[in-house]
Length: 275
Length: 318
Picture: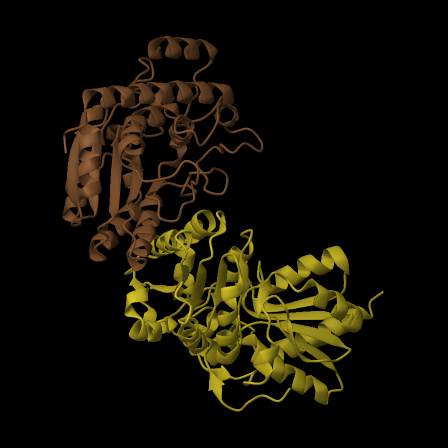
């Protein structure tokens, strides 16, 4: 590990920039959506899709693909952006986000979008779903890994901890949780709404291996995901410390942009910053 | 149809069906610390590698089942009927919305469960699951039909909910008559012209008693075991509404939203004939013996007889 060359990291950083452009553009076009948590999670998703995840863009439903479960389903713009950059979705698809008949539904939906493995939208369920995928993979003697993107606010849901308990009990070695620790939820900062404290320690107490990294440092993300991918000792939780709205100054650390799309003027400013 | 003399609880039929389904390697079983009660324990004994213990955590169980279904398994997840309700939103959003083939069994449904009291007596499960798009909803009456219908679930490409009951009741079916059972088709146990009684679960046996009492009074009843509440057998309703001209429903469930409601919805928009509903009248249960509770909640064969007489009389009101 740790041998990814600087050129590849630069390519991934460029891909993350293009994803951020997609995120602000599609939420602006829809006049709705969740840019903040999409911008915080996108670097992790680029590192994962770019360097680790085994899947086939020409056959997104390949049975033995690794699974990516977007449990924080409101961050759907990040999912659509990555699928766009990977060539599964086209520009027209993502710009139809949230419109009638669009393959890009408001919250990620496995029945509407190729390459989406889980129908999300109600928080707290994705880790359980990933556990089900992991148990099935073991029954099938498959090597596939199951990655679940969980929001930090989402860990307020009790079901996350039901899943954490069960994943350890059932020795779900192929299960990987990425916790997007941006410290902001819908209404306000978690410190105001409901601070959960040391999420890593809580997973560790349930028997998980835990790593914590800077969620916007591409090299660190690639390193930790490659390590987790090659490890046979799961379940593993990776806490990625992030900034909500990362990459667009007026959205950064701003609870207002959890669930608000940029207007035309804001879009222009955002695109300037991202150019 | 003459009733076989021995009795059986529908939950035992579920347990036997799982063993029959084990031939299909896709079948997996999930339980939430109630396998001895729901009877999934027999599958666990034989196939521990395909049984997943989820502990007392029903919400997690439902979505783990969904994840397994998305990976090509056919999960059968069971707990008490009332505790499936705790995970209603998981069933709605995580199982039914993506159309995953997860089969949920809620045992110990209804007032019939008895002395555990109101917290354990699910009387709204059929109503809430019936409201979910794409779900098959069933409530068989005895162990033989529960076994047969559970086995048939393998052919249903979508989610289902089946309520079973705790207690042994006299059997309605035998090994021969069970062969006529089909998911989605009401099972006609007797044909008569005066009224059609539609019953599900433990109320089927009570309806058979009622029909026999009424026959002595010269009232000829059609009797239907409406084991499938959804999809509703509309062809049968159309035929019997013409044949009988009055309906009675009988269920160990709230009169709000269950079998009675589903038939009321059908007749009000298709063929408005008199309908009387026997069921729990918008109240919770309580502790007690099964028989005395069924009497207190007006769920006896005599209550069905009264409703039949009333429904027939209403036919003559201009």
